[in-house]
Length: 169
Image (cartoon, rainbow, N blue to C red):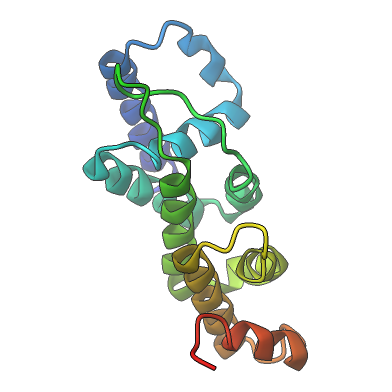
C-alpha cells in the first residue's frame, strides 16, 4: 500500500466513524496530533473488529512513514477517551494494549524503525506503577526482538531485568 493509499484509508476510516459516532466537531481532526489521538482512542473501542481495523491502518501508516512513530508513542500516556456508545464506554487499557500489539508486530516487520525508541519500551516493561502483565510482556517481547536483530542495543544489566519479567523465580 502506498503512502497516498494509506492516507486515503485513514480519511475513509475517519469519515465512516464520524457518521457512526455522530461527532459534532470533526474540524478538530485538521490538526495531525488529533488524528493520532483519535486512532489511539479507536484502539480502545469496545468492538474488537474496529480495534483490529484501526490497528492495521496504523501499521500501514507507520510502515509508509516511520517518522510518525513518536506521535503514536506519545499516545501511550493518554488515558483520556471519549465514549463510543451511550453507556459511556471507553477502554484505555485496551488502547494501550492494542498499541503495544501494533509495536510488537512492527518489531518484526521494521525493527530498525523502532530501535531508537527502545527506551520507551524498557520504561513500559519495568513500570512498577502500572504493572499490567500483558502490556509488560508485549514490551518485553519488543525489546527482545530488537535486541536479537541489533545486539547490544541495551545494556546487559537492563536486558537481564527485562528477560526476567513475568518469569517464575
